[in-house]
Length: 126
Length: 107
View 1 (cartoon, rainbow over the protein chains, first blue to last red):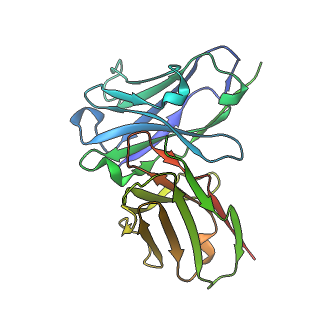
View 2 (spheres, each protein chain N blue to C red):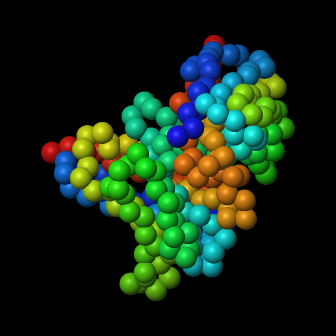
């Protein structure tokens, strides 16, 4: 059964880069079959899709993030790691949110995101 | 971007009630509409895709309908575990967008 788990610092200083990792278990990123997404939820607000990466490395980002976001697949320095990452640079307090990773089946991407991580809270503050 | 607007923003209902949530798109999205359930501290859960297809494992009391710009999520008989926030999401174009959410609370 596919499972996703987000990890990373819970506190980031303004103007710095937010870096999060999503660990995938029960499936392999490199075998294809999925788009790997990042979504966030600002406090008390709705969900915002940030972007996705395909196993080939191709990406698509939400234009509202104005080029601040990068999603990549981690080349494993440790055997067996199966992860993709989010980097968001020049953060401000407006980037404080719960960040989720999620999966979309590439056989029909319009079917939405069917597996999600539990989310990780990131606060931007000095 | 395609704007998604849900109504109401919140509602109070009792166990056993029939509940309907509406989602409107700023342009036609045909049937490229998905519904999610989200409980605090939990991962969002895909309930319905393609406007009316129930995701595997989702109880049959959930149903979806609509096409074009107006869609509805219906819970036929509200259960205690259904108290949550519900989001619609358009997948018509790759700039996926969500509605602002509808919180279903206990009356």
